[in-house]
Length: 287
Image 1: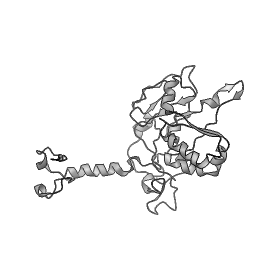
Image 2: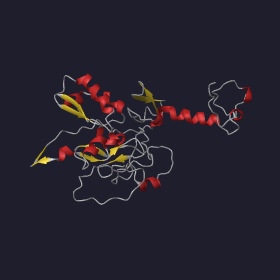
Image 3: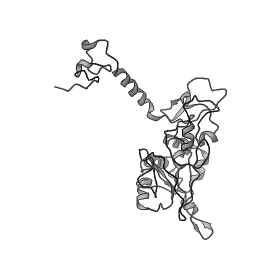
């Protein structure tokens, strides 16, 4: 995904030189917001022309997503490319095998509390804003990651900040986060990721709903049809499951109107009489 590639990617091979001639494979960023954007990117004529008669190496965080992507690529273009390869074990294993980072530059975005790991920080950033480190003389060139608000150099996904128009994580520096208060999304106050800025996306993510089994989106109403552009792909965290869990917890705090006469063992509402009055329902054990 593009927001992952913003802080780390394999393009060090393009900067390695033999005399004055650059060597190594060409780095390609599909500019995806989520993995399900891959089929649409691959279907583009420009993409197919670029990959034709080439060897393709795919990589991802831990080697899972590229398993499916490489199989799909083989199905669609297997006879048109010279070979399809993938990085076994993903970036995580690569960084363990090459402690100096090899051809990797930047950080490897991970979907857990480590946040992002790198050759110089194998344990991850851990979600805590740290002091800036001085760049050593032997350190590899930096990426152009920057804050989505003030555009200063920044490479930390902290504060759970999301793009207002497509929902992907955005890079926001600690100074901007301290000034960024809860507000209504308007054209002047939108926080947008680089892709949405480039594509001039202005319709907020809440106004878009999933279609085609979550692959694409459409506007929920006609409010923005005349004056705004919606993202072709929207990332909505939790897929709606979090909302259902929240509603279920809310119901458990309300007393059931039928009380002890309720016959539903899986009733969502509160039944203090069923568990000694501790205020929470428990699943009944089978006899």
